[in-house]
Length: 133
Image (tube, rainbow, N blue to C red; front, side, top):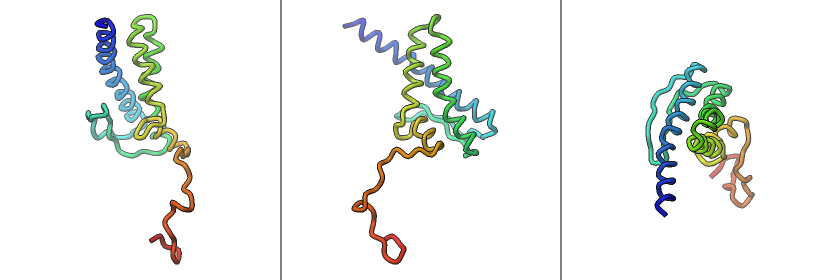
């Protein structure tokens, strides 16, 4: 039981540098794309980067850069630091999932993919004279 708890604690501690490097990927891509980074912070859901809006191609590149940083670290470190490589692999894949406010959902939105179900006629507000009420 103690070994399991130590393994879990170790994975959580390795998640901190993985998250920092993930955000560094976003920041580096923003700088390369000429998009100004306004703030980097920590919220209850993790680290985040606030930046100015850029062109669509830059926003796509910046959104991809964080998860790609994690996946690149996972590949590069798999033989040297296998546990850290696993943490980065999981972080990279997780961040590509289309979860609300994730890189994956931003990427899909930038590509024009809408994952929300279409509104049914019953859910739409009534329209009178061409104006929603």
